[in-house]
Length: 265
Ligand code: HEM
Image (cartoon, rainbow, N blue to C red; front, side):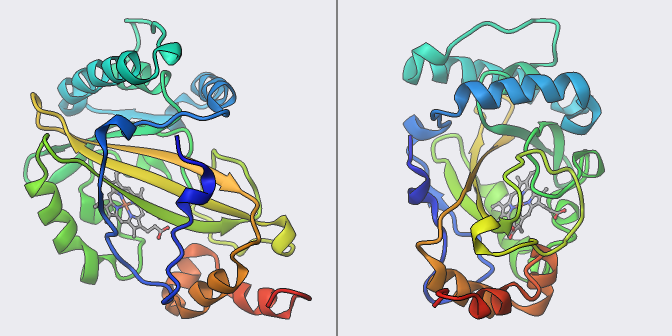
């Protein structure tokens, strides 16, 4: 279990669009922390009130989802036995797997290209799951500035070369004015208020291939922290991001507001 401060992905050299992949220690595939009970309860509540927003499946993702559930159950028994519990066989396996862990889970299967075929995403950071199901990696990332030119080719190549023996992880981050984990919106509004009202939202994403189905699983855990210790680096990252990225992330004008704030430098 990593403390949130282990996951501050700010680059002192400034903002950059990068795959940022690192080798994953498989004993740390799925993490758990003191928010376990609260986040599982939140998932249960969203699965009751907003099922169509948080679950999307297709028959192509069934085999991968069943295998994913087996892996999640085995992982918990081995590494976090106190977190093991049973789930209802009547539910879709990706929902059952998701009810066991704090992470969001996505299964991608290759046919013409790698497509999202099953997902349970309770904590989206401003995107809509229903608009992504069955689309491929390039389409999923359509709104991300620079992705098509800089990341599409290496990401597709990475997925083609991924093997069950070696898994990876990466981080995304942004600034939001709300700690709400469930943000199913495409709004790109800049955070309101000032630094003390903002949350540094970090998503830790793991990528692994399942040996039997060859499906690729992405897990994404979200941390939303108030932490002003890194303001100078944050400021530098915000200021060096391209205008299109600032608009996509809802950062437009944020660096100036931060610079103008008393004591920010
Ligand atoms: C090596 C693999 C991947 C890379 C390098 C990558 C990269 C990125 C980047 C740079 C962003 C912009 C987000 C930000 O800067 O805050 C993004 C957004 C996103 N990624 Fe990925 N990603 C990868 C895999 C995946 C996978 C497997 C999924 C599966 C669902 C996924 C789903 C998304 C979604 C839904 C968004 C938000 C798009 C939107 O705003 O509509 N990504 N990704």
